[in-house]
Amino acid sequence: MIYAERLFRLRIRDDGEGIAPAILEDGRPGHYGLPGMRERAAEIGAKLDIWSGVGTGTEIDLSVPGSIAYGKRPGRSRLRLFREKAE
Image (cartoon, rainbow, N blue to C red; front, side):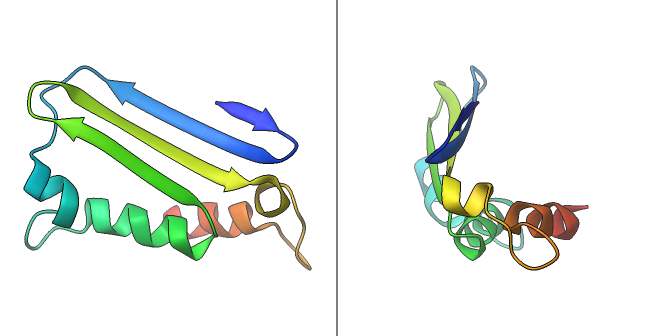
């Protein structure tokens, strides 16, 4: 995790089974996990990258510009809004 003035960055990595390329690209039919993560990141102005391969584990990298992550909107920050949606 990086808390820099210009960027908040969260990187999560595992050494599990990995995700098949087709699922990584489009998600699984009837499931909204990966597409939902991408949609939420876009909603708050963040960049979400996911790398994976079968048998190689998975890495998720979320980067949020500091002006969004730490900035204030009237009443609450954008990340606070994001947390409320996720709870």
